[in-house]
Length: 385
Image (tube, rainbow, N blue to C red; front, side):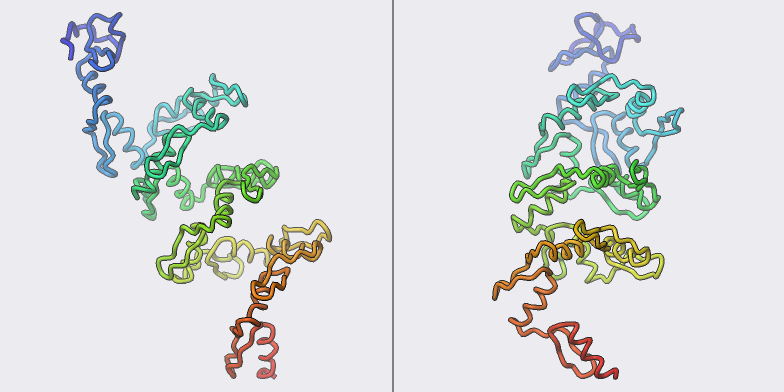
């Protein structure tokens, strides 16, 4: 470390050019110069592994005390920087500065591909990776690549099991701060993202983006096996498991495996008996939200799915697809025993009982069993008179 030449000039900047400033401390590794010894000591931690300031909540360590203070706002929710025009608060000063550029029309950094403007140069650099397809950050465990370093850090917590962001209402923990923020809107009911076509509101921006594709018809994600297109990447990922046969989500009670996490969560409610979604009209409860949505159409009379051939309307998309087989003559469900084909999966299931001899529908009066539910219903009339 260089000897201090003169420290009387306190107006010398935090770091300065050693060639133009005669009273500095200089880093031996990169020659960056500082007016104060403590600033040099802090800087040298960049080159080493020393991180003496540790968060007492998640144990994350930092080389500077100021970085620790900033990080701790993640846990405390403190937002000390306030925009006076919108009364909006921020955890970081740089976030406030970037925000103020939005309503002051100060977005000096423009993408030369799509002309989108940004208030901060790093945001422009990050955005341009969308156009180049570059993913410079790679996970050393599974080799998955990311365009942003923060996405890599969040992803790596899948391998480490770390969930440092905890909801102060229900104690559910999350890998990323954005996931926690989105989750907290369940408790607050906040839905800040609104569709400008139908005014439907969403708690996260990605849900709005996905929803808007209903209006535009956009399906940018295409399966490279069967060319089927999807409006969002997660739907494509789930679909591709049809071709690969991958079922990465396993029930720890019965070991049944599923291709997506939501199906596993829905299945697990069979074991727990949980039915968290309740109809506000008749109080009937359901294990998943989609079943509640379908049920509510009984009360509203809504039939949003219309056949483009005969204009018949249906409450469920699956019912429309099954109906359309009447017009196309398609019979996509084939028996693997006798090769007979059917237009509905439920008819195929009932047909297979012929081969298996199974009679799953039993009369609780006389214990007579039937292969079809309709035959059990007809039989019950004998007892009822």
